[in-house]
Image (cartoon, rainbow, N blue to C red):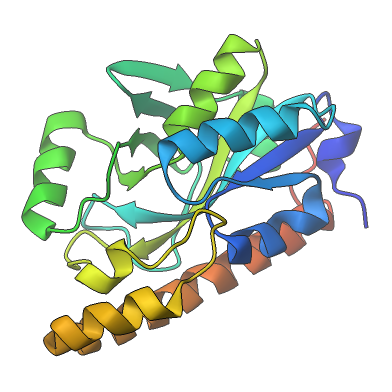
Length: 224
């Protein structure tokens, strides 16, 4: 079923980091995969623009910086902080994605694994969540004078430490590289429990995105 977004002023394309995230967003429109890092996200945003879309959505998982956010909580920020600049999202597009839920999302250059670093980022910026892609996507959208918004689900909350295997798991195509994970586990087997917990949290986050995609597709958030 076509999403009401397509009937509104915008027909967005979606940028994800992971191939699994792209499958979730696919019912809503064109999707490009960036591989989970800012440079890849910028390239993916340019590719999805070439599809003829009239807006861009950064879609997928994120980390929590505010302690109140738990795995599966959905984040639609009012603005994205990236390289010292604040990029406001398009209000109508954000409403069609379910409505603003947080004031700020911080886009960073690299993952923030340590809970103490997450706390420091929150204290410095006030951003409730963090990812590696939304800033690059926002920058591309701004250069193209294109409406932009974010729909993300929290995977690792503020009090969770990312295990080393999670930081090297992806290849450039946004796929999990099992040999990288296995090699990291051989070197540091003590991270297994944290890695399994992260997998469970990611499953919760993906289910939240599936539900929101269904709500969007059935017109729950239709904006006049």
